[in-house]
Image (cartoon, rainbow, N blue to C red; front, side, top):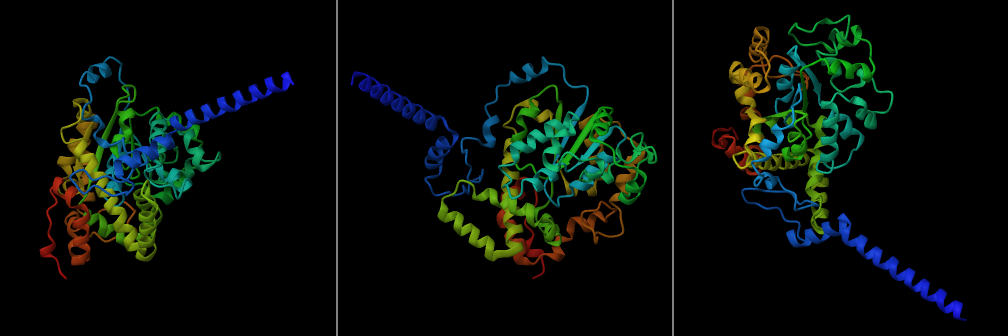
Length: 432
């Protein structure tokens, strides 16, 4: 009898201890804090701030782009105590249909640059339909590995049999389609667009290990992508002195972006959905159901315009972060430019970019950028292909192709970003 009582006491103690541990784990679990913070920050309404610093509902509302405002300036001294990398790493931060392929091509042509075109495409395709905000951490880790010339990370999204032939944009890469990496290719120093069909014919597929060795031979590694929604996500990489990372952010008039997105809508639907789905994170079920219903009835145009609004809100966060409130070392590693300035004043902007990165000027590259902005027309049957365009038509084409109502909606959604970037409303000049 005594043994039974003792056994029962031990059993009760065990149950009690289990309950205590379970309770403590709930307190410490991220989801509990997420739920608690959401209630206090948003009042369970999931509303979006309409002020100067708009933000989307977040699962972790305590994280925001202002976290660098109180960064201690002595961090600059701490960073300087570690020897920087002998190689410079550059991230071209842009969005879809902003002219980023043209910007990336300028670096692709420089003989001192190893250039990667949108490696995040592989990750987004593999993890579809994950929303854009949820994928930011994985995207940052991807960049970190690639900047260190470790391409094995791509196998997580493409399988173990991935070769250079399967890399997104690989058949237009000067580094992969020229000597010495491709013995049948042209000289790396020669400036000129790579014809993908010629590269595929002359340059057989190589292993990622071979590509890693080639990557390490270059003093500058440049990655262009359009899938980073918030530049503050790169904070750990920027503060890593061994990485020596610099960021070039490209902006374009949102009306021109929208015009180009409409012309390429079928190619952008999946990723626009991933962007728009980030707006639904953390909102209450009723609002989420309403947004999903709007998406269902609105179709492709609603999807594209909604995604553009999210993108413009991301622009505002980046602009506020980098408009004087961040630490001085951050400003030394960041520069921004507008697509319109790049194509209308190509030599000035090219010179600025090369000086910022630390690359020597090349007369052939200067002639290349002039030729690429003085093409016969803006129209192209293949909008994702880099080709010579008429710069003035490229800048102003939206005025003739968007209706007054379409322009009004873009200006309403992106007005704050347009104001900071000096894009003036011009609706009254448009045709009906």
